[in-house]
Amino acid sequence: MSSTTSPVADKMSVRDRTTITVLIVSAFVVILNETIMNVALPSLMNEFGVSSSAIQWLATAFLLTMSVVIPTTGFLLNRFSIRTVFLIAIGLFSAGTLLAGLAPGFEVLLVARVIQASGTAVMMPLLITTILDLVPSHRRGAVMGNVSIVISVAPAIGPTLSGLILNSLSWRFMFFLVLPVALIALILGSRLLPSDQKRSASRLSVPSLLLSIPAFGGLVYGLSGIGSPDAATAQIALLALAVSLVSLLAFVMLQLKLQRSDAALLDLRPFLHRQFTLALSLMVMAMLALFGVIILLPMYLQNVRGLDVLSTGLMLLPGGVLMGLLAPLVGKLFDKVGARPLLVPGGLLLAVILFGYTQLTAGTPLIMIIGLHLLMSVALAFIFTPAFTAGLNPLPHSLHAYGSALLSTLQQLGGAAGTALLVGVMAAGTAASLAAGQDDITAQTDGLSNGFLVAACVSLGIVVVAAFMGKSDAGAPATSDAAEPSLSVH
Image (cartoon, rainbow, N blue to C red; front, side):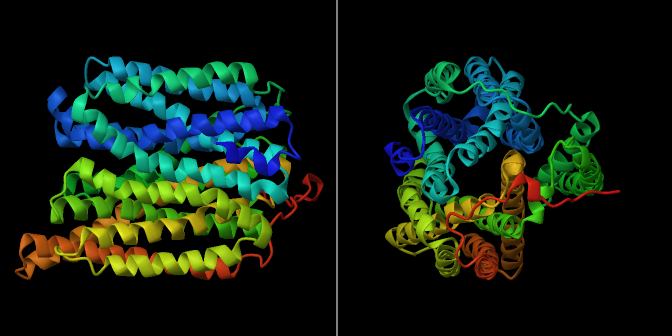
């Protein structure tokens, strides 16, 4: 993590650099845990004697908890100090991790995952907000590049690490091996992180909190279940989406009213900044394409090519590592040239690679698939760091926490939407191919090609949005709080 300190050493104190380093390492650990569980679900299904639909709740409950807690982080970050919020986050994560490792049954493990997710949800907004507060705007790209390591490498390592553990150890070691690192971070954070109290004295809006649960939780649940082959599950998902949209409208109207007195749970004024809105829409499209591919490519490798889980993880690992290695370099480039010169070629390359995935067959050489995945990782490296840095840079200090919360919330929703959309398209394509008399392997390949095609079309939208972003936004100064425009309901 040395790259975290060197780009900003001449402008940041040792204390500030230490703060960011502790937060980056901690965020890496908690995000790693988000994907480490997926590979173990079949083993846990046998261990606890539960159905496949029940065991999926270990992943679904984690996502639902994240989607509900993240919108509250803007309030928490404005109300409490960095140290307090960090201790809450890493404390919840550590408690959930210990409980998960000791869980005697499925129900306790499910509760543990919810506790873990509550801590995980706070960590990324805390990290991003702290960087915005401590790092000068003209140097943020390099530091934000290290955040991209958390976003890209941790999820890529998760399934591979899980497969290696399950090959020789009990599933409980997925938690016991992570717990010491989390506890060390807890100890370091309690001693090293700043405890300066935040300014805001606003009270928690309970009606906003109650509305956020069906609004964001219902949206993620509905999107994740809408493509289910089970008719009852799909109907419940549609109902959840309907309830979510009504709750979301009420939530937004309430926030617009409350933010007039700086009492909103999730202040929406970051959307008044054009650059933020464009970058956020671009990030949603990138997450939609990324999460869809994260689901579709392993399906191809396992269902069409017959690879086991560990081999699949090892094939996809180099791409995640490459993205992480490139991220700090891309961040430095952003500080020099801005977002558009990086986003446009990144979006074009991503579209080309995804169109290439549509041509996969049962006989495509595996080395070619690895090559395509490496190139896709290069494209994503040129998208993520410039997008969220350019989007957050123009925000005034008073909106840093809310901008980070909105970014993290929409990332979650984009991932859920991408998974639902592309899996639904794939399932429909597979069913149509089977109905036309194709064999199972050919039908699955056809369905996967349809899913990749939709992802490629979405990625072209990244190019379009990137073209409208500022021509030279590297080191863009933040808008002053005094000049902050008003967005409210009267």
